[in-house]
Image (spheres, rainbow, N blue to C red):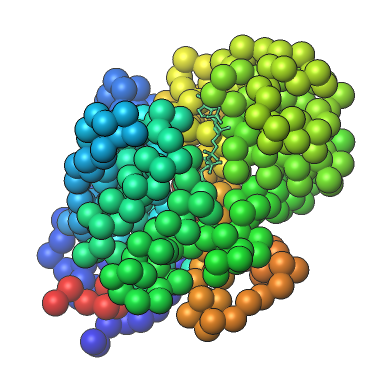
Amino acid sequence: MALALGRLQGAGLSRLLPSVAAGLETCGARRATDGAELHQRRTKMSHSEATNFYINEALEHLEYPKRLRKLLLTPEREVAVELALLRDNGEVATFNAYRVQHDNSRGPYKGGLRFHPDVDLDDVRSLASLMTWKTAVMDIPFGGAKGGVCVDPRDLSERELEILTRKLVQALRPILGTYEDIPAPDMNTGAREMAWIFDEYTKFAGFSPGIVTGKPVWLHGSLGREAATGRGTVFAIRELFKAQGLGEIKNKSFVIQGFGNVGSWAAQILYEMGGRVVAVADAFGAVANEHGLEVPELRRHLADRHSLASFSGGVVLPKEAILTVPCDVLIPAAIGGVITEENAADLQCKIVVEAANGPTTPEADQILRQRGVTVLPDIYTNGGGVTVSFFEWVQNLQNFKWSEEEVNSKLDRVMVEAFQGIWELHTEDKIPLRVAAFVKALQRVTRARVHRGFD
Ligand SMILES: NC(=O)C1=CN([C@@H]2O[C@H](COP(=O)(O)OP(=O)(O)OC[C@H]3O[C@@H](n4cnc5c(N)ncnc54)[C@H](OP(=O)(O)O)[C@@H]3O)[C@@H](O)[C@H]2O)C=CC1
Ligand SMILES: O=C(O)CCC(=O)C(=O)O
């Protein structure tokens, strides 16, 4: 293809790829930081509208042609299925499940599976899109997808959960594949569910460890994957502190919403580095200690199936209070859409580090920008999970095992390099970190898509 294969970085697409841009309607540039009209334009956005808002903001900064925008905003495939389950009590229950494949320009579709009562197609669509931009910002060779089942796993026995997971694989099997679409853990799924997925898929396709990541380490999983999202979040905080001249993690205070895989690992690693985790919350409550919670003790307490509220090392708070506990860094690590225009003005932190996917609504983001609160965006912050998933996939393809040190140090390097790319754009183009991250990701995805061609 006789295209000018110049880098797309920092320049409008039309300038670099005239043959693609020719004839396409172009948009005038608008500063990404100018969100004044946002509040007039809309009331409440759905999850996918919020994600698309952020993408559009970056597209406007890039001055991309309009017709290319639709391609980037809309998913390539959406699959909705109904899973029927014969319950232990003899009743038949049905569950809606989804897999959305957003983009595979840079490699196979990749993204987790969520089991949660709030899961719907719009939610999964938004999460799938975020995966496309996340894999791009981390510069790992995957596209973006996400799946989910609308279920509260607490209502099911382990046997029922296993059958439901296997039925999901049976339903999605035609669109999954080691080089096609590779699931992974997300909320309420982990190594146990990934083992079932590996086993079920292997029944049909033969030995396929690379069909899913986040598997148990004794069953072709990678050392370091379980902690990877939390560890990556801490590396991200360390890099931000360095760039902002804020010094070390030691003695800084952190508040964490969500104490599952991501939140509890982030808390543990921050604690080990001398950070003060002053409050954490789960879906039922919150516990706080201004001197810093004894995180290892709290993790043991919860592992023994006790509640946060019964932990004696802090005072109990209502779970809603978590976002306004004073701290240096607030880490949302649970569900999406929790920082809203209703509470953004009340946050008492200097920095929000988005370990969860989509925790901040665009309206809240605007308020935080106006207040000078730094927001480290999800598509970078929680990218450690998919990065180590990539390492697991590579190990599976090679039938080889890396040490935990090797995994962690490779993760560290990826987090540092991704941060540098975002920080450079943030400072040079004077755009918020979120816009910079989306700009970086959009440049990589469009470059791949355009150079592959459209035929
Ligand atoms: N796992 C991974 O590798 C990755 C996860 N993420 C994102 O990180 C976030 C957390 O995922 P993960 O840790 O895996 O999920 P988990 O299911 O392991 O943990 C979720 C945590 O959030 C808590 N929670 C749920 N709802 C609320 C609420 N309304 N208020 C406060 N806490 C709540 C849960 O509480 P309870 O236990 O009481 O239900 C639990 O502590 C999600 O947004 C996910 O998409 C992003 C990248 C990778
Ligand atoms: O590990 C993966 O492949 C994806 C994890 C995930 O779903 C996410 O990053 O949101």
